[in-house]
Length: 125
Image 1 (cartoon, one colour):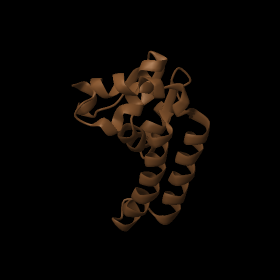
Image 2 (image 1 turned 180 degrees about the vertical axis):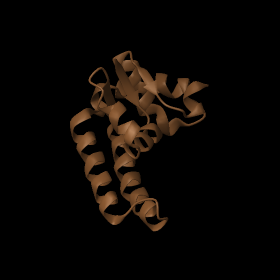
Image 3 (image 1 turned 120 degrees about the horizontal axis):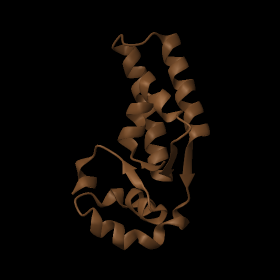
Image 4 (image 1 turned 60 degrees about the vertical axis):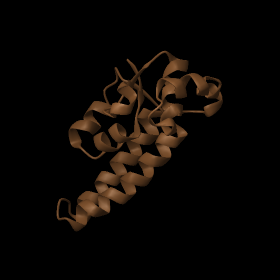
């Protein structure tokens, strides 16, 4: 199953054991835009230290979680170049008028004829 992954989903799943197991499912082929990858990496590196400061993780657990998340990003998430979907920018923006910043994810989904894995209501409008 091919899915285009929204940043919020990817971040959340990478920070949970259940989510990491789901991402490793060989049936799933997960694709993101460079923008989603950048946001994901930024948020993972920001949130893990917060989890330590709030007592949810030890320092050792945090280092392991960060390493696991990075490994999954490198091995299970495919980044698609904007040149593969930029021609669909106008159509994508027309489909998601409430948050035009998300047009690359929509355009990628259109280009690959794939569903978007998201919980962001802007995608569902």
